[in-house]
Length: 236
Image 1: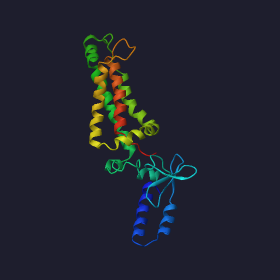
Image 2: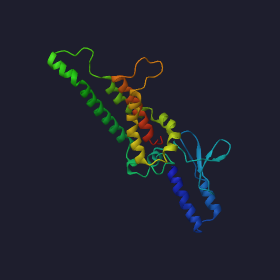
Image 3: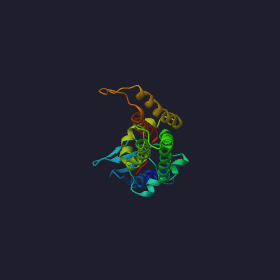
Image 4: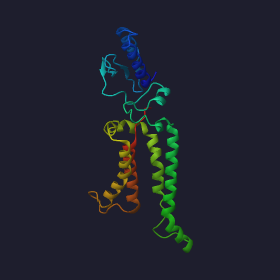
């Protein structure tokens, strides 16, 4: 049984008690018998009297401010319940789709974006090569930025678990913001970062960020900020 299953069972037992089909003692005994351990080793159960989650701290059951934020005891539970506590986010049909498909989509999109940028950044060099039969001095195709564009979703996937743990407090605030507003903010943030960095000289730097260096910093910072805004940490 997973966390969602425990909540559903609690509601069913509560309805049976309210209808008089079972007594309080029987209801409390059945609810107290339902316990689950997350991947961090913490045991959880539902308080029969309040319906709130309780966590075992090693000495006693303590009320939790929200249901378990991550960790399940089975793959079935992981598939059926994503990041308890954000019920508004798990109602979307998109949440039911396999994360592997989203990974493939992100990799494919990043590769296409990297290829498009490489082609665009190489147009001058290619024209010069065709007309002069040599690469222009000091102007070579940009290989580094496309590699960064491809590497970012890979790194987000590889380090998703520790990143998600860092984002949990952040998400506790953002969950109150409508999703469409978050999408708008995530789209605007990279442009705001680019605008701010364009005319900003960090202390101790003799020159501003320029050309490809400026672009790469914007890609990294903008990409991470947008990820942090839109990412709804999923249990693993």
